[in-house]
Length: 278
Image 1 (tube, rainbow, N blue to C red):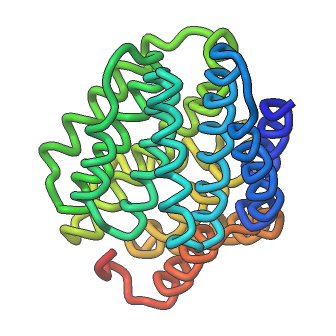
Image 2: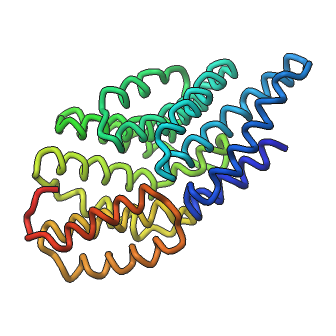
Image 3: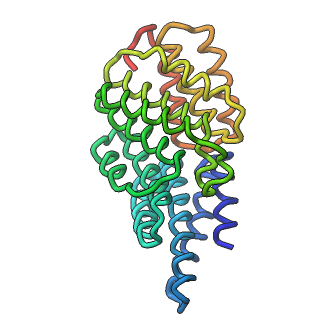
């Protein structure tokens, strides 16, 4: 039952944004944690820990997406602790990389890499690709293009071995080609912010993610917003205007503080001289 409700809330989060699901997810999490006080068999307790980890991850992510950073961190810590006790390396990777994304958003690369370093063991191929893109983003924050490029190459090679996502754990289904493309483009976007130089691939990666046929509206909205921002800064106003209009349209369906922040950057880029620093 917890797993089914979590899956429903995860779909709503991807479609509508973290603000739309945060309060409901938090109530579900509190009820689930209360169940750990009951007397259960070891197998039931183990299953409960896995369910709590996934729900804590969702609640933390929704808090992050809603701009509630101080609330997100302890929730991520709960998700990490229960994932370790559950004993699933893939689930631990899922929580750790999401927690790292919060630190990357706040440009805290050391903390992001420390979270990524907690992941070990056997992982689904899609998860290895996701972990590599998160590491790439952390290095990009510091302007370390060599490390970033190495991890992006590792992500590309890992994702090239992905078969049917539907056959893996439920949470890996969201690690689509569009998501990896958006993550790779964001790493290049972050590097440009650190160095003031654009890699030509940033536009192609973000354009591919923006044009992807995916139900993950927030992924497309974020990619489209960042694409328009880069194009404005490069002086390509005609294409930038097109993507900016599309980003505004997508954003109307997504209540996300992260997206709102990205749109603020877009508006600043639209009003800045071409070639301005990222």
